[in-house]
Length: 176
Image (tube, rainbow, N blue to C red; front, top):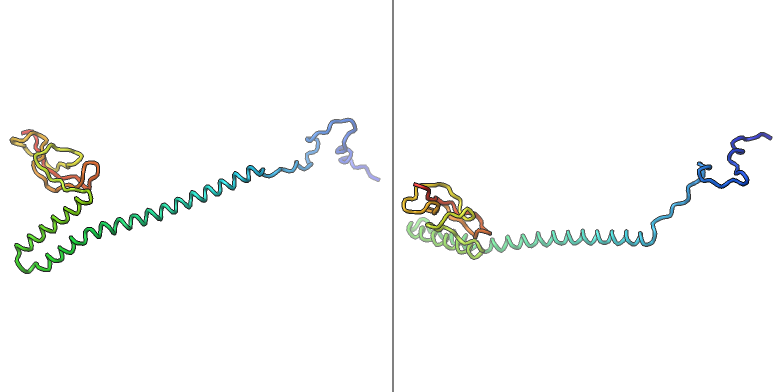
């Protein structure tokens, strides 16, 4: 019979206190998994995230549908304008004066449509320059007008200060 020195060293000593570090090869105590409460919280979190993702997708679909419906409504409002332009072009070879009147009427119709949509035409002169509604394209001597007064509208603006399609391009009176 042979003597194994490693066996003799790992045998517990009688009367000594058990030490976990004395046996480095000993298996670690079995880890317990998440508790039932933790599992329930994880499940609730996964469900909440899935619900949030579904809400986000539903909102994206509804927003796309609303945009398409609004585009269709705006296009439908402009159809009579296009129809009247077609009529004006159909009569282009007849009386030129009547064609000009027809085009002017169609322009007025388009301006009325824009106004009904909340973008009224702005082409006032003699009013103080307002950087929220006007875009100065030139400054000229004002003569009798006060400096900063709108003298001429080069291109009309549409809409109000807080909701406009574009500002009016204007010529403004400067100092003489």
